[in-house]
Length: 241
Image (cartoon, rainbow, N blue to C red; front, top):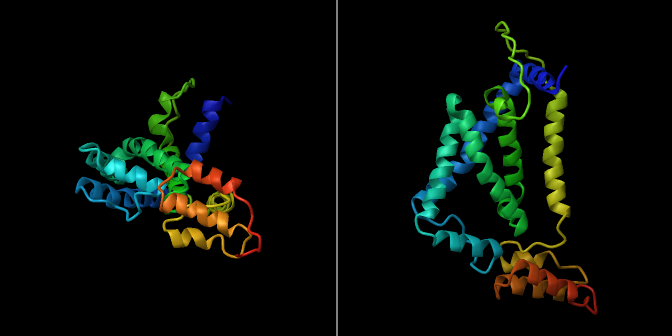
């Protein structure tokens, strides 16, 4: 059996499971709900965050806000992608439009360590990929495989067997995202100076940490430069002081 045939067989099995179908609907609704509010705020020309302009993400969002019609254009793209996702006939188009936007948000969030979307954006990327996988038969011909015509199968009732292994994998992915984003970064800029400083209390790096927070929230220095100063700063003479 060729690789293409194996994918067709795997996809056919998944499409006949009621719980996987429910999950595809859940992903579509969740993705749409994630883009419509933020997209509408851009269309209406409103800011959608209270971050200080000194914050790394605040720098970016403030510059984005002052880009003229480009700012509402992003909002129209987000809302359009969300609406297309909700309509069964246009789900694939919506998913392909949605993917580069949410992938950009995920990479940006990790680049500046922005807590607001550090966890949600990678989960939304995975949900988007699931929707595309669920609709694989509609776009598979753009892949560089030798696709043989899929056999015309008789219409079957959906299988009610709960896919325990699949949902265990989903929970594992969610847990992995949470754990990795919790422990992969030694320090975070956080959203305010007080929140930023709180992560250093009780350590022997309070002075270095406070300097890092001031570099971000008071001086508006780039994250990389603030991190460099933090690493070069000495430990406290007395822990926690």
